[in-house]
Image (cartoon, rainbow, N blue to C red; front, side, top):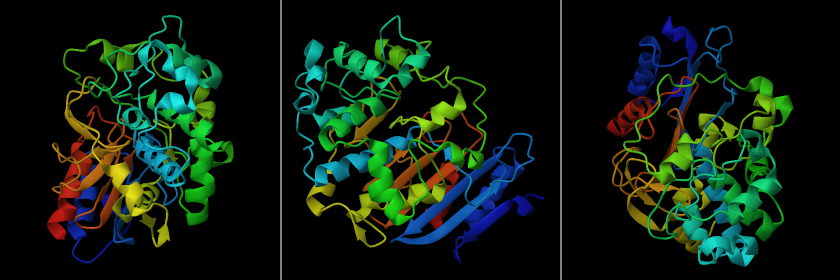
Amino acid sequence: MTSDIIHGSAARGFETVRDIFAEHFESGQEIGAGFCIYKDGAPLVDLWGGHQDRQKTKPWERGTLIGVFSCTKFVTACVAALCAERGQFGYDDKVADHWPDFAQNGKGDVTIAQLLSHQAGLSGITDPQWQASDWFDRDKLEATLAAQAPLFTPGSVSGYHPVTFGPLVDAVIRRASGRTIGQILREDIAGPLGIDFHLGLPEAEHVRCADLRKPSAMADFGEPNAATKAAFFNKHGSPGGRGITQWRETEFGGSNGHGTAKSLARIAQIVLDGTVEGTQLLSEKTLSEFTTPRISGPNLVLPFALTLAAGIMKNTPNHFYGPSDDCFGHSGWGGSCVWADRDTGLTGAYVMNKMSNHLLGDPRPRALIEAVYAAL
C-alpha cells in the first residue's frame, strides 16, 4: 500500500499535503521523492517516500541523495552572495576585473550581476570541435568560454545558461576568493550547519544516491533560436563520456548539486533574512543586492517571461512557487524546485527521481505548494 512507502511528518493542519504527496505515488507520477517546508526556521512538513530505483527494490530513505540539476544554481547564488558579503567582489564589478581573459570578443563590460542573471550571452558552447568530455577539463572549459563571442548582446536580454552558468560563476568566485563554489559551500555553510547538500560529491557518498529516470519526451522550447540551440540542442552541450562517478564528483555549479529536499529548504532560509536557523550569513545590504531584480521580460532561451535577481528567479510573473510576489526560487531539470517566501517565512523544496519534461512549474510540486498555502 502507498501508505507503507510514505514517511516523515506534516504538522497538524497540513495533512492534505501528505495526502497529495501519497496520491502522486498512487497515480504513478512518482518513483521516489521528497518534499520539505520550513517556516521561520522550523520544520513544518518533511516527507519522503517511494524507491531509489525504477525496479523498486531500494526504499527512498531520509538521507537519500538525488541530483537536483538547476536547483544547484540557487545554492551557487547563495555562495556568491556570501562572497559579496565578504567584500571579495561586488555585484556591479565587471567579470573581467577578476578574470581578465573574459573581456575577449566584446564581453569586457559584463558585470557579475549580469553573469548571474543570464545576461552574458554564453548560453552554450559554440565550438564545433567541443566534446562532452571537455567539460571536465576546467582550464580548457574556462579558456573556451572566455574566448567565445556572445550569442546575443550582453545586457540586452536574459538568455538562460543551463550548463555554462556553473563554470562561469566558479571562474569568478575562485579567482576572487581562492576557493571553489563547492569548497565554500562545504567549509562555510553546509559543514558548519550540518546541511546535507553537496557540490562535488565524494565517491563514498554515492551509495546514498537514487537513480534518475529521464523524461521520455523533450521539453517544448517553441521555435529554437541560436541561443536556445547552443543551450539545449548541441550534441555535446552538457558533460558526458566520463561516467556517473566522475560526474557526481566534479563541481558543476549550475547543474549537479546533490542533496535532499530538507537540505535545500534549509539553505533557502538565507534568502529570507540572511540567516540560517539563527546563524547570520548575509547583512541586510548584501541580501538586498542579492535579491534585487536585474532583468525582467521574455527569456531568449526558455519560453517564459522571467524576473531574474543575482542567480535566483523572482516568483513574478509566473508564480511557480505559490501566490507570494516577494518570493524567490529556482527549478531544476525534471521537476525539482526550491524557493523562499519572505511574505510568510516559508522555505521549501521538492526533489524526485522520475523526471518530467516540464521546464518550469512541474505540476507535482505546484500541487504540493498550493496545498501548503491553503493550509496556512
